[in-house]
Length: 151
Image (cartoon, one colour):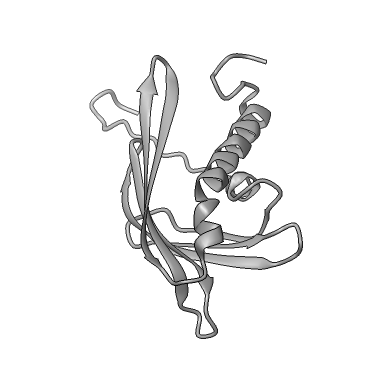
């Protein structure tokens, strides 16, 4: 390569299983996980509860600003016609915090039909345990604790 030639490098890796391993409340698994992380791209997950009940989750990425921000919609608790009975819009921010990554999740419920009071009341705990799971997966994958310290 000559010095005056443009220097570019693109490397792509897919870590689908990492997302499937941490998304969702504690003790849930994800039997299906499809992510198309780009504006207009779709999210599809089948979260399986410990009792075997499957909760499909579908959404669309609205905004993707690497490495700072993700905004996506999500719908769950589908009716017989496949329409979500609970819809949300979630913004995830990634900020540098003295060499560590600070992750901030902000979710707004945009639709909730009557009868979903219990899932709504557990939303904070669900997100908290999901992020705890993310911390454990990152520890296994990178060999560091969620705070960034070496094992």
